[in-house]
Structure formats: structure tokens, C-alpha cells
Amino acid sequence: MCIRDRRRIARSGSYETYVIAGDEEQAIDAYGRTTEPIPFAFDTERNGEYVVFLVDVDRGRASVMYDMPPLVTRLAFGGGHRLLSLALAGLAGLLLLLLLLRELALRNERLWMETGCPRCREQELMRITRRTSDRLLHLFGIPAYRYRCRNCTWEGTRLSEAGRSISPGASITRIEGLR
Image (tube, rainbow, N blue to C red; front, side, top):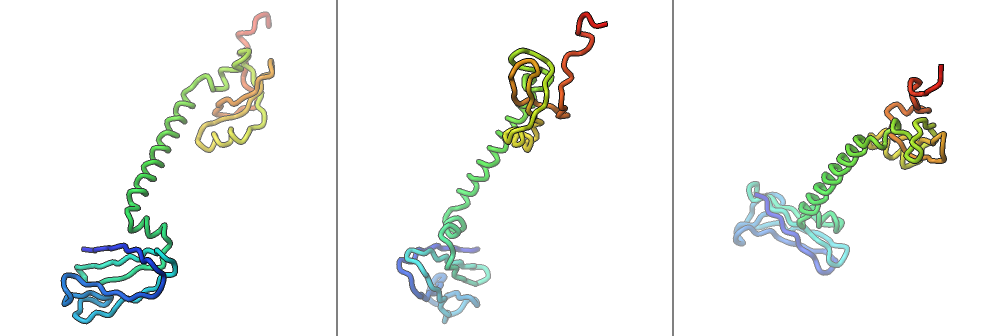
């Protein structure tokens, strides 16, 4: 069984301490159980610095941890596991949300290149240089490219697996009067 105790030392300076488990006849120092313990010496450099006392009752050993950054002391020995658990749960939730948004974007057929221009419904689009936002979408596994309509002035992002430079446009069989 390991016991830990975190104490805030009011004034900076040099200190000595003993670890007593039970009564004064059952002291514990760095070398084990003893009736005449060797004191732990430690120094604090700042007022209000935390010092952590660790006692392993099963092995009969003790130690003092000091000169740690306040954030490390608070996270490791001051209930920081709750904060870290909440942070990890938040990251997992954010990852789940990003995966859900990715799936919604990939299933939205209005964003695919084959749907054509949203203004004039022209099917033939020409690929142009991507912006940073398009490249960022690509990092999340969304095949986003930048296109411009050949008929009107619209330009925007469309999803395309192949990233073709020119969309296939209307099929030949749909054009009338061509023989």
C-alpha cells in the first residue's frame, strides 16, 4: 500500500522531516523501518511550493519529491487524473465528431464534381489551384479539389476521387443534332 501526501511549504528554505507510520517506534526512512530514522532533507526555492511525501508501507520505504513545477505536482498528485481523463474524453469526442462530419461530407452528393455547377447546372467544370482549406480537407480524407465553371463565373470546392482536371461534362448521347 502506497500513501502519498502533498503539502504546501509556506516559506522557501531548507527543511528536514521524518515519516512516522503509527507511533514514534515505527518510523520509516529511505532505507526501511527503523526506531531511529534518518531525516529527509529538502529545499524549496519558492514560497508556497508543493512537496510530495511517498510512503510504501508494504516495503517499508519512504521518499520526498520536491523541486517540481507546480503544474506537474498538481496533475500528478493533486487530482490531475480527473483533468487528464476529461481532456482525453474531450479529444475522443472531438475525433468522433470529426469522423461523423467527414462521413456526412462524403455522402453529400451535392458536393461531388459530377453534380456540376450549382448556379447554372452546367456539367463541365475545370480544375483550378486549390486553397489551403481544400488541402486541409484532404488531410482528413476528404478528396476536395477546386473547380471553375466554364459557363458562368462560379468557382468552388467539389469532391472528386480522381481529381480530374476537367470534368467529363455531358455525355455525347445527350447532345442533340450531332451526327
